Length: 350
Picture 1 (tube, rainbow, N blue to C red):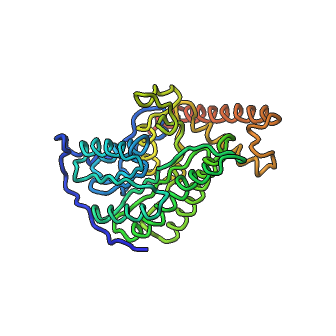
Picture 2: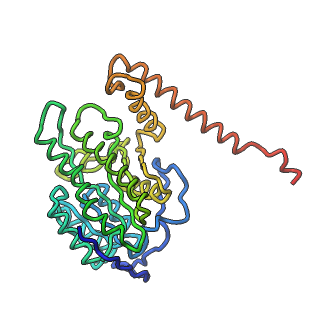
Picture 3: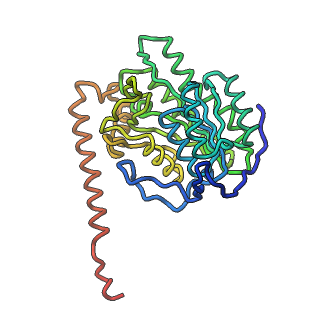
């Protein structure tokens, strides 16, 4: 597999095409329901003016939100998507932010290795390196355990093998780059807690989790400047999850998060070095996510029935577990607050 030499990006300060100066300040998260930790002083080293971000599934939703965020911070952006009309519109909007010379849009089907190889060649010929690889392309066609084998193949080809194609085509070159780089693969809570209803999608995202865990392990042992991260969004209102009307997406439900807030949460956790980036939304807290994941793992450890969370005989036990767990988390928070505000009896003697 061909590797490409690193090209050091220019660090000069430039103005955006709309006349606004590019900010070299770190990416910051908004004050929102998704904010769980204070914003630190620096962004990840790969997120730097002049560096290159490649985003699949970039024409809408989370991918497009990330492209806008990174373009605003001076990164060069590669937009890859299978939907040509949406891709053209996305390219125009990102070019307004970053300047047309800093945007490359490529129609690509990540499930087809030959198209991924062509994408790699275009990207390295144009920008010389990839510092952030965001594997986000995905579909949500239904496939039950006893139905829709055609959908199973489509979902696996895009959601799992699409990520594998991108990783195995781009990462060998990224390892040899001079600048630090990172890979973020989009998983799903459905690939972790496995709710019944769409086994094909759940299995594809469980596969992404396992692939990304092994990739992170391999990169760590190779002592490379590349890190891998698993991005697990919450309920985000996008074309993949929302209702489509003649005028586009319908009104965002109150419990759903925006793609923009989700992207900022993800970037903050990447900066902190987190591998598992499990995003809350406006309906499901981080505490509830933790408890659901622990219960799912407990099915295996404790020998409960498969998917016991949805088993009628286990429903009371699950509900009690959640209620008790949330109370425990709340008590711990209150205790920390009391300790933090407790007066120091030695203070007057200092």
